[in-house]
Length: 197
Image 1 (cartoon, rainbow, N blue to C red):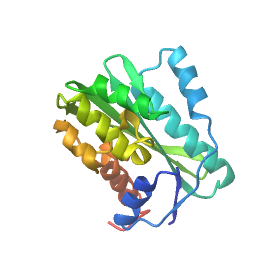
Image 2 (image 1 turned 135 degrees about the vertical axis):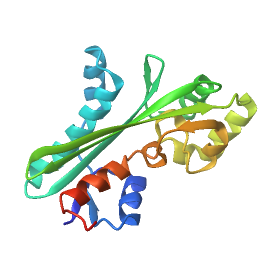
Image 3 (image 1 turned 120 degrees about the horizontal axis):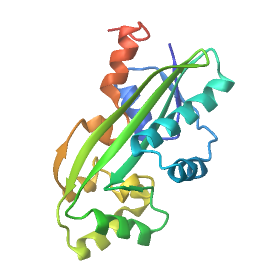
């Protein structure tokens, strides 16, 4: 089986390949911001937003490849009652990091599998991360050094890079922090005989 990853995320692709899953990435054409705005207007819960966006991506690719197994993913950052998105500018990244400094937030990483044009499995992984109280000077330097990388990440940090220095505690699965609940996914694929296990 070759899994179709409905994503342009390089880290998700690398995680799957490192786990010896045959995978091909196809970027879905989904207007995430419009869909997210509609869900927020309906007062949808953050985990439901992540799940819905993951399904939208999987369905979009599955419509063009109905015979395939397609994986859609999305990640949402929840801070209190608010959702933070990918930063648009370096100033936006700095503002997000200032808000996260000294606080605990949640990352919700959703994955939805379509097989033969139908949803067959879904999972939303949750991780709690506590950021240190970080000096404003360090945050400014951090954004300046890392903008090209962190602009693709909710919360304006990457734990797998220098962003690890920002945190004092993490409760949950590392793969989920990276945007893919990999272990539950591999378990499902193995149980169904879609990968060797």
